[in-house]
Image: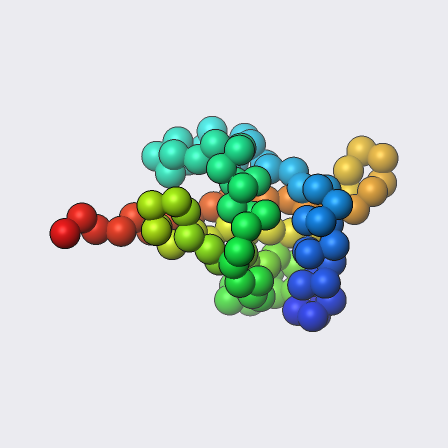
Length: 104
């Protein structure tokens, strides 16, 4: 999928609240990243930049949502488009990374 089409679809699904957080990976596989479903949803619904992945294995399939959390930490959420159990298209947040700001 081209970036312009993916971006349009991202904002459409976001506006319709058709978002799913892949809890077993985002939360359970990476507890050190300190995510909650509520925070991930808040971040993906807030301001940020939609970008294509730099991973050539997933180019056109996975995309980045770059934003900042409430503490100013840089956040990168990986998202992709999938179908739910009823065949409806949804936005799936599959992983998240947070770069903590160093204390001064």
